[in-house]
Length: 456
Image 1 (cartoon, rainbow, N blue to C red):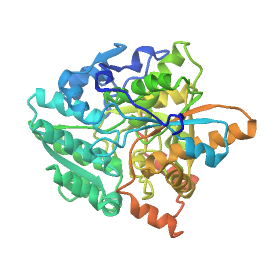
Image 2: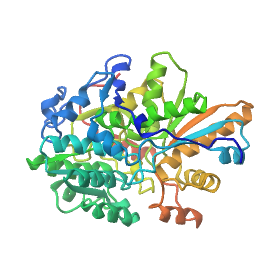
Image 3: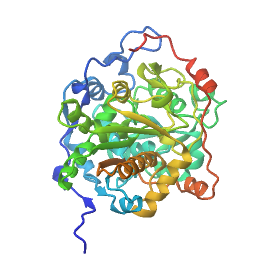
Image 4: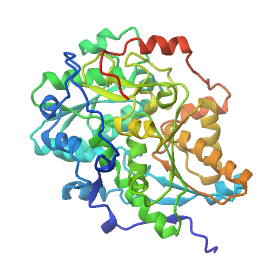
């Protein structure tokens, strides 16, 4: 047997004990969220979030501590799938005939099949401690809804999910998974909320619409809170267990990544992998490059504007400082449903603005071409979302070949594609479209931006 090592595995005692809070290391002051309804343009404080979040999560949201301890009950649940493996993609390297060393951190080993339970478990635990009986949420492709349904079942909370219409139709078994864990699932836009009824003209739905529906129900019921799977600081915080493990595993491999790549929709997967590495760059301890890969059909970071905007379509959330396509933007129904969001996490957007992160956008067919190439060499069938990171990793490996340089590339494979085989069917049959939108469509979407102070 060859002595070439393929996977790098940590043991349960090596599950991180603390989350990494990048807020403590960011250069300058981050723009605060603003109260959006009514549009007072005043900073949103902890009291403005108490109708839908428990105080423990609000304190994590605004914390400036460099590390926050992970509660022991959360670490106990993490043992069901953490630590997750790091792989050296040796077969892909040979296929590409590249001198680059390619590694990927695989989060598809969790019960719901993605990275999302890292924050779902933490959020449900704090809501349970606060006496909350039920959580509402949105989900795009279904990974987040599955994760929250799973976590709610573990801690005895009810779970109600609004699933983006196009994904609800494309991925029926994600709905089955959520219902198996006891969740109630609605196709969004639905007729059970005022927000949903107001958006009936957009039957394919969007994450922004689904967020509006979930927030509406949570805000109207005292025993119900809302849970968000991405974007907010505390969500990205919880995901940093990924990057901390990857740091230790890269040390096991005896290598330092030159480039770290992850897909980005709202930002939780990207932040989870990259923030522990980014902290080292900000502190002058490394010179790593970072690439955020997004769909050309929803190119928030590459074509959006840096401005204050609502996090949802109807305008019920605070105004967030972020790259946005306009909260009224409803993206085409691409199969990477988890990336169909009009904005991105303020923390990630700030890093892009400062030049610490390079965004790239990819069309649907070139993304699936990379996914199939990966599956045929490495065996794992990736979800459409991290297939964007695979596309970027292949580009970087090919660039290393052309330059004759041995580079080390690390990317995040945040979930498997077992519920996405209809998308692979369409690609293999040559029926997959490459939707993009025009400058006129972009201008129309941005025309709805709320009045707010300009961001530098």
